[in-house]
Image (tube, rainbow, N blue to C red; front, side, top):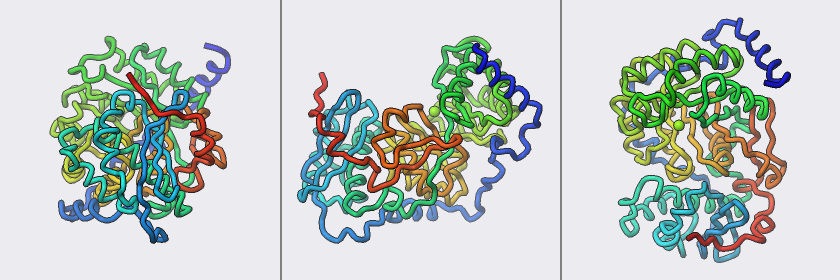
Length: 422
Ligand SMILES: [Mg+2]
């Protein structure tokens, strides 16, 4: 450990003298999200079903002429063009390398010739088109998310509105983030060293580390790692750093509750995906037992199962993935249901541009929880935006400008070529 790192840990350890769980920003907020007694399925359905986009000013058809998958360097793009020359662009999340046939054969053909103003209805139309619903899951919804992001960008550029304005208005220009470790190959000591590096590098005030073994039927990634890491993280990082833990579906309810209690003891912000992700009843058992909020939903693709989770308080925080769940419109419908129940929506993000779409979602969604995920690649994209993206004191700035906010998409895509995968 170098001297700066050692100094960091000394300071953090000093902060560790402060009592935790006393209403500081890192503490659990489960108690603040009491369920409304008049919560009904009908209210949730109504909230989810209401129109999402604000398209005033878009008076004439915006007919989609082409949608292409392009590649430039390490980035893949979906570009949409209208008959009258408008365009918009999305960045994919890496899964296009094997999902491109679904995009090209089952999704793009549906959209050609359609009016982009009817985007909300098209999400249902393309789901029915050629029985696409039989493919649902991220294989279908990622390609749809790319098209949705690109069409929203185009609509924003045509109307001069940011994504936040299209979704009803910008209420937030900076978003507090946590940086996620993503590792399980580390000992507790190595992991807290690594988390310290991430904090130093990004200025984050919050981190997320992994517990359990990932879909592992209670097995740990290495013996004793989780039980060692949880208290050590608090001790080494101090009380000013907000901690999140993700089990990636590792546990049955008894083990999840045992680990959850340890997370309560360190005042963690939430406990993510404690049980197998589709075992909603087991997840609810854990949610019912713990005082720490339980978060989940990153693998979910069904609006009705989200409705179940919200109505039955299967989790305390819902986490649709902006790519896997099919884009901003569908995720916003989940957030609207969650809002009826007084629950936050903290979206899960895929890599690449995922954090950009997260920032836009956060710009217009009232209750996003305390911290949003950031995967540490801002430098790659900073200057695509005007003003450039920035990190201020543990918060990311929301891109400004029309659509997604890319300053010059013609320049950006000048050398891009049709993507070919083998
Ligand atoms: Mg997760």
